Image 1 (tube, one colour):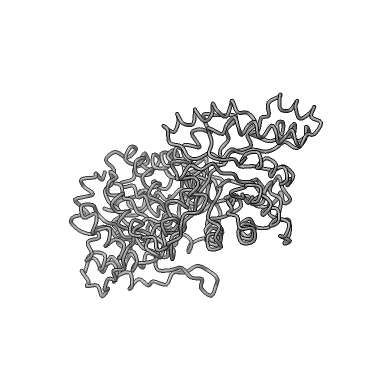
Image 2: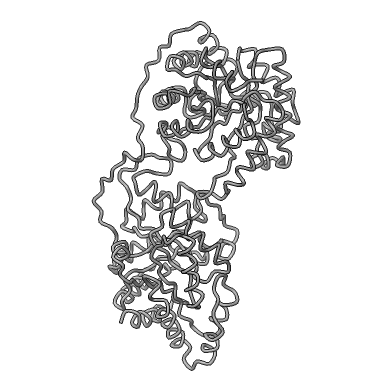
Length: 618
């Protein structure tokens, strides 16, 4: 058994050579996707054993189990989600049989879960932890010498996996490695120095870089890690360069075994204790690295030292003033805003004229909805720009994450900002199934809290989600959604507190018809958030008629209309006027608890919104 002390003594005495890409070798020895590479542990153990034998013959000190994707999330894609322990245990048995009678160690390979963790994604930490417990527990129980947590996209995921490994593995050595994109940052934007500092604080035995863009980048990154974490072993296991498609259409990697041999020497010269290969590397690459290390061959590599920028070093180069909305919120001014829907087509004259009318009636701002009720309309940021340009009134752009991937989100946000639209209301958006195109995709990469985090911690400090520098920071003022009369007040209060911690500047509420319940919720929210709060803009929807009131009460989630208001709408001689009167009463009852009113006119009746504005601002 390899102990932590024994491992550290070993890497301090001479470099430890790992194998290359097991997946690359397996791909060259089989056809058809089957159950994925991890599933071969059950269906073709002889093929997996052959890959290990090739690496042992090449002279490795460590082989990794064929379990990179053997967690419940990834295995579920191949119908093996309920066989995690079986797949991992089989992989250890195969590797153990191959190295029997040698001094080669067996390392349990633990890759990323293949899902995005909340708040950016939808998988909560408890589920991620359970998946790592399941896989790492099986690897340790089957008898691995080491645990290798590799190719991780986020520090948080590494932390969860490393904590689980230490709890499960006790005295088994743990190596943690992250992958970087071509701008020397992780997928979620962390630099090498930041990664090294945080990983070194974990109870692990080595930190480093694997996969990434190739040996040149990995040498640069591991050198930076060595500089800030001199007391921990450093690992380097690069890809064989950038992947490309060859003439037969297969993915190939350009770096030769000789090139890798040169870099193996460079890694050792730079103080790297653990070397190996990742995607595109084969037993030939590893054999060349073995010769270079054993013979002490000098390296011809001259390191390039590109600066590695941290987010703290990014300074705003923009002199853009805060938006009018932000200034109003900061000064405590009571504000009014009205929701508008973009046109269903390209004729914008009516929208602009209605916007001008609402401005004259007293609206401070206009909310521009984005595909409300999943009904196809003009893009909201284009409509917001037109309103600001032609009606001369600042807008709040509704920005749903549903149906947008991470690339599209950032591209649309930059476009909106460039067009002067800088107030955002971040929301999930309406599901496609209720709209014009029920079969349209609802996929999304970010939850609303994740988008708030992206805006506050990345774009507003001059970085994109990957950590690459923008030409200048954005200056978005960010709103979130809440309900003052939720079905589960405790859950809603906790969610609002989370949005505040993430960085929301204000909140728009769902239409509210029950002032007493709203009072109670606001008090609960203040207790849950320990007094931390943000300006609330009270959602008000003037009732149109009795049928409209009954529909909202019975069919719209989150909206409850007291019986007294429904009775008044049923008996009113002029229902629209009565609806405005009820709305005004609710505003007056809650005015002291909120910093503004967000009017949502039914059926596009902006004239009713104007009537309410006349009363609210008078």
